[in-house]
Length: 197
Image 1: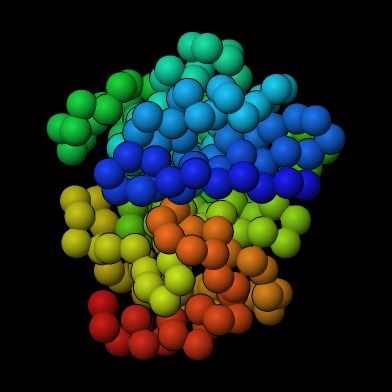
Image 2: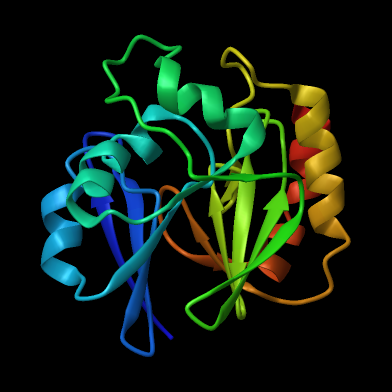
């Protein structure tokens, strides 16, 4: 499994391409991601969104039109793809697969596990592929996703952090913004964030 990452747009949202056995999965194609994705895939088979914020889903529609591959999104954030609730001008897209809670999929021979960590958004999730956790805007290196947006929930974020603190595997964490980290490294600082929310 090979992972390629490119920060996109003024918010530098990480778009990931996961390649396995000659097939690619695209995670969070944000603003102006289309050309980079098309230049770096040969046999793309799915688009996975960690959550519905505009800077993670902006290029969904364009890539769907060009590649005709399914879009996976947490069910509680699906409305954000279609309705542009923040008025950002996000091109409307529609999920082909609505992910409910913690759910596993087999895509291109890879076990894809959506792990529901609400708080930043209602559907906010991390995507586990082998030993790599694509955390979207749930957690970052030394930080967590904001909980002061519309549809955010500080109480849900606290519960989500507690859920991650019970993870016993030291997965590599690939966040939606910034550098990669590990579960064990973040478990050192996450209790502090529970008290600060």
